[in-house]
Image (cartoon, rainbow, N blue to C red):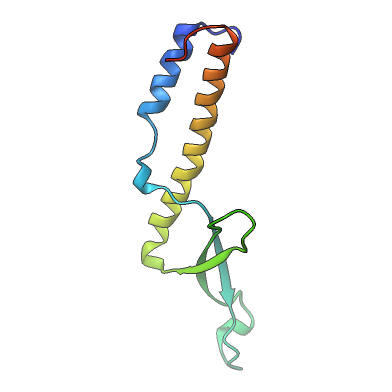
Length: 112
């Protein structure tokens, strides 16, 4: 960033802010996909990966807590995956905005 002009940094910051995902559509956690065997002796799952996929959302409400698992129905899997992606995108964009602001401060310029 040192070779980029301050105007270009401000322009990039405005682009990032305009592209932020909607705050209502973010979710922090991880999707876990499992396959389970039913235990019936003649079922196809004996030789294969099992029944599934079954998906679970792992979330932590507070630092230091154990993760909580919640079942994610197949009908909502795509939306949950999108919300998780939005959270990762938001994190990356906020990190870049912070880096731009730090660079502007390093240059002794206004950050607003």
